[in-house]
Length: 186
Image (cartoon, rainbow, N blue to C red; front, side, top):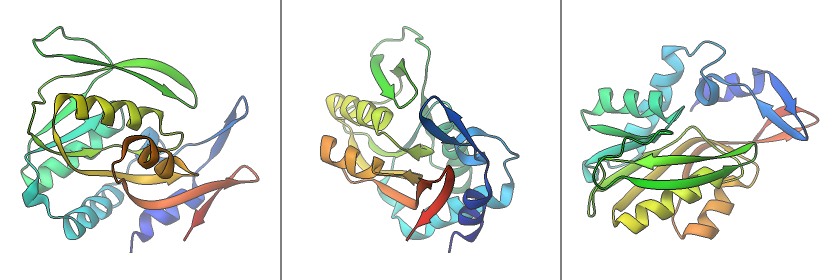
């Protein structure tokens, strides 16, 4: 199960930025090449393991939440919206400050309303900064966060987010960095 994802993680390159080991993976970076089989495997897993009849909207976070939200929307017919890194100034726009292991920025939520039944999808949870900010903002809006699904969990990211938001994260594969290499955690 999820063999393509696991294999691709173990084989992906790792670069060091300061003291932070950063794995370079198709799902989290769009490079190396994003193979359709890998995306299909992840989407099929989500469709088979979660009741998507409970979901009205798929919400992805720019940038790598975009291909995940798009692929899931195409396979399910559920519409999607993207939390963007740019403001459009639309009525009801919600600004969100995010801080990650490698930087800070603003995100902007549009097209999401109170009582929407949301599936939030993003590529990886590592320090938890992005997801904590987004989940807290979605709570403030008053959405029903049905699922938060993140294909790749690095280190203690899932636990950090769950402890700081009170929401459950569904992760598909857990990894940690050992001697500068990606290692699967079972």
